[in-house]
Image 1 (spheres, rainbow, N blue to C red):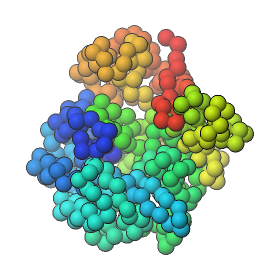
Image 2: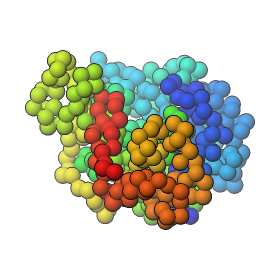
Image 3: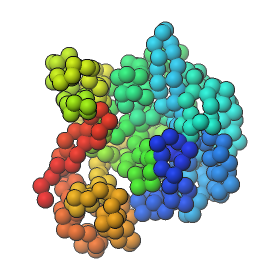
Image 4: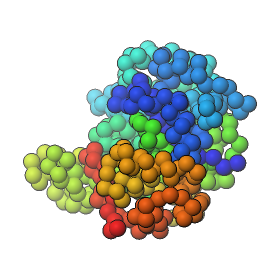
Length: 397
């Protein structure tokens, strides 16, 4: 059985997150998108965990919970801020648990290191290595994935926040419950394949959505029985028969792909940035070092677009983004939403974008059809994202 999963999103209790991120809305949009499994998000927040406990129904599959026809896995993202050797690190970490009992134990443990009521993604004064080891002890089935590992400000290998190697993160060795690394919107699998110390681990892609319309913009396509154990084993082994491929943003579309300084509208490829000493030519301040630059610095392998030994990947541009570009309107405008809702009445967004249905069968403006075909054929370009600004689609209609 194939199913599509988005394993990283947020609840209304997370900062800068839409109040629309309820189970009702998430389930509704999951059906539109073609998703079968979502992360519950934010289980350390007491009010959200109580809401999940009340609303989610146990299924016959271990560690999988259901609501309105969509399955959920209990999860949370936490923000580890800690110091080692007088250097401060800021790491975002994803935790997954099979049972509410495990979630409550982890919640109780983490409450000793930060205010879990303040944010659905709590800030914890807790070394990430110590946290992984303790979670393994108190909840052996739970597992950890590091979130958007290259983002400059809050990531395991971010230019302004993280480490230069896994041996620095885990001097005593990587704990057995660390099962994967999330590439983030500003990198893709081939970029990550350049970094040798990631070779033994599974790369995952997720939306990190803060609003319902953005769920599924990156995702994982599994082919395995749907249960917590199966997901855990698939991530642990990187089995290509269980993880068919990841759904990817074009990395240029991510908001930290290139180096830059948005206050001065300066955007640079890493090679130019390094020639200029990574300083903004307009104001003289340091540039925000993007994901591509950071990957280059830690790379040990040459870049390869394809690798048959790795889990596959496919690029997609979200359908709302395509419609918005074609109509020249904001993606939450009535005209854009009207086209989207009509198009996804009979076919999911995933089916429309991936070619699982004939575009002639669906109501879509001709310009939208042309862009979808261009994306499928890899014929799109972007002005790259930088310093917190998303990249922009460039295509002639």
